[in-house]
Image (tube, rainbow, N blue to C red; front, side):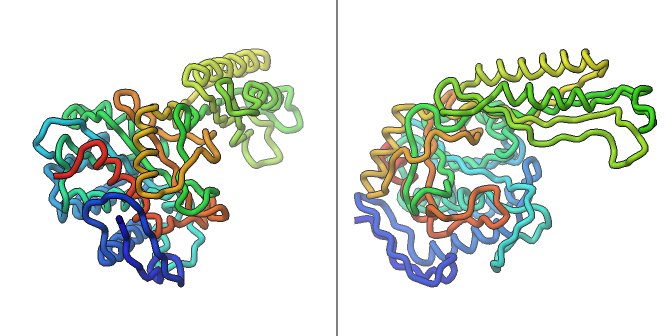
Length: 411
């Protein structure tokens, strides 16, 4: 039996004790001391969030923690501030990568907890602090009982929230030495029962992008708007036209959704008819090629309407995410591992409209994303009241460890 001993959860967001029993063959279990230390580590990360591309201190904290478990090699500054720990058996075999994210969000935390964010306007409101800690827990278990063949890679990836991180990792020449054959990730998913893992073969996260449309005209006195070239009517027309491009609906292969997220016209004054306008639109689709098609349609609409009203137009693209597709073989490996240790799983709430850049690792590896539930009524991601539940750390790390053992064995 694989048993994680009783642990007091006064340090883990609860006043009760938790008994977590995971069935099946196991290597070295995490001790109560491990779980207390890992919880403290997660809460330390939570206090010091850093945004995408700024994860300098977070990376240093990860590197210091990894050195204590002596991986074969630590690769730093990969894809920016990324960190990869390599556990190499020295025996030929596949390379299995497990990914977590370093970055936090520009959200002001509203939690009354001892480990609340110390950085105003920034917080780990997407659970990345917990994902990193799950990887560190996995590293402890691999270090204590090494794999029999191949390599395990613990990948701490930067800039997931902007969609840039995974692309930067795989484009970095350093990635060639740790090219993965298999890749797995866990993301917490509020709304699912505690400890339940949602996953499925095929589409799991939609593709998306952000398109900023800037319209430029000419100001005039508010008493004589006809003397200027205001963007007001053009923006009003664009809103309806852009929203019609992506009506949403059933999440199938033809799914497409366009969401207007921000509008600005002129300045907050009563005396000037505006010259400039800005629209932010987020486009989502079930397929990368469909996303590209919708973006092209949005640009064409903006150009036509801008011309109609005598305006200049500029486009700025950001936050580009490819679809995340679960490989059938990787999905089956993950499900078999979860079944072996008694973790409840299914496809509840999948696929998701939300995007994830983990899919990039699936371009060259057999990859699967697993969505771990903290409870049906748990605060939503990207919510100022969100905090990763530490009681998920042993569950997530046990899943990853079993996957590693199934693919690579144990010495």
